[in-house]
Length: 237
Image 1 (tube, rainbow, N blue to C red):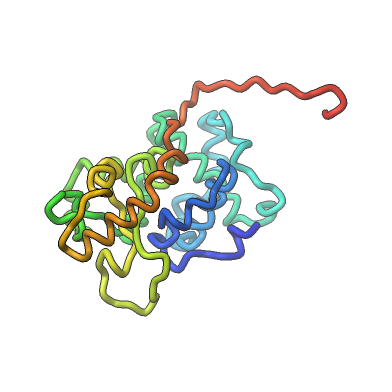
Image 2: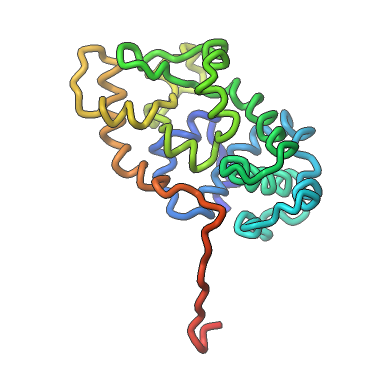
C-alpha cells in the first residue's frame, strides 16, 4: 500500500536506481510502475480508458491476474486502468500484443518521453543530456523507448543514476541535479575508471554503488511461454 501513499517528485526521481533497490518481487515492481503512472493519469486517461474491454476483446489474458491488487483497486477507475496498462506494457515488450494495443503503449510513451532525461551514451560526453529533439531523431533510442519503457526489458538495458536527494526548485537540468538514464553496458565499462571531469566521476561513483545490486533484478528476461508447476503441501491448502 505504501506505493500508493508516497509518490516521487518526478518521473526520473522515481526511476533512480537507489530508490528501486528496495524492490524484492514482481508485485512490488508492478506497484511501483502503477504509482509512477498515476502521476500522469490525467494526461493519458483518454488513451488507457476501456483497456479492460480492449484486452478482453483481443483475448489477451495470459498472466493477467498477477498484475491485479483488488484490495487497492476495486472502485478506483484510475487504478484499474493503470493495472491493465502495466499488463499491456509487458505484453508489448514481449511482442505478444496486437498492433492496436501496441499503439496504445506507443501513445502513452509519446507523452512520458517529455519527462525523461537520457544521456548522450557517448564515452566522451555521457555526462550530457540529450534534448527531446535529439532523442526523438535517434531511431535506435526512440523505437526502443516506445516499445519497452517501464518494462523489465527497459531496465535490463538502462539504469537511472542521480543523487538520492534533489531540490524540486532547482531549475538547472544536468546530470548532477537530476536522475538520468544511462546505458548499463556503458556504465559497466566506466564504473571503475577515474575521470578528471567532476560530473563524470560522480556518475561513475553512482554506477559503482548501484550496478552490482541493480542489474540482477532484471537479468532474467520476461518470457510469455514460461510455465509454472504449483504444489501445495497437504494440510496447507
